[in-house]
Length: 407
Image 1 (cartoon, rainbow, N blue to C red):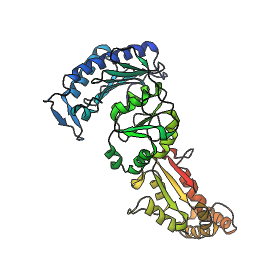
Image 2 (cartoon, rainbow, N blue to C red):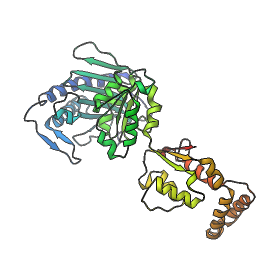
Image 3 (cartoon, rainbow, N blue to C red):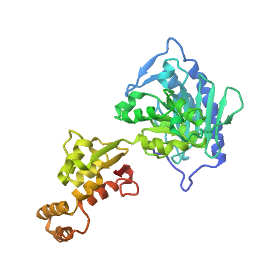
């Protein structure tokens, strides 16, 4: 999904004179789109089509987005537009409107009122406005950067939207949209851990679940699969309500393909749960070759790989089917490995390397070998730990998000 848009140089955020009229417009056009959508809601002759990805779409989806685009053409003709149902429109102002006319189309089709119209606004790729209107509930939650989040029910006066102050996951309410998505991405174990950890778990999904977090009625909403138009309106609302909207690595972004809304007191706990854990056991190997056997068995079972440090790097980067969003690498009995992969094994590996190395590298390998024979210098264990840590926090490849735990 493209993130491109003409930006305004040297300007991180818009001023209120640019922001306020766009928020007012978003609130007005979301109400207008809702009126159109409700003409189709719970009607017996609603026609449903399937898009290329097999997701459903209706005349209401297309009609509502087209209405918003037409109004934008009149009011903000030079702003860019990204929407779910129609092609991108480039712009020149740094602003981009990101539209999901009906978030929760399946709920809409089945006559369930938990669907919403989402309108997000970016400025130089930073989400600055979010409006989430629930047509069938006649509710709206909205925010602009620096102005707080607000919740309005019907024609009542808007009230501040604030997340809950919960800090104990055993007291939390957890929402998600579709449990089969967790299974499809091989994260069923993480879902089970969450279900067993929280006080209450419910399938109040799509944007409704995220707005439950923003308004203090739930602590956690997690989506394993999200497009930018699913997320753009949510991020500023949840943040202005005092919470976090982040991807599964903890980054504040709408472009990672997944997302969660969470209260501050549970953010770190939840992110820790979401990372899959792979455990190797130092009791199972005594040599580097046997270490590679353990890696193959645990991390990439049944797959052929190079069984060397370069190939191990690829595995840690998300190659060979390991999670691209990172994982926890737990090394059980690591102290036993520290001994077994110590200087004696290092001498063996360096002697083999000396036979195979290019003549230009021979002197450095000979130096390492001399150190290892005297019981000094780094060991095979040290090599492996350093390589794995390089893919974690503060490492050279920290974006791989691999957390090493030595037990």
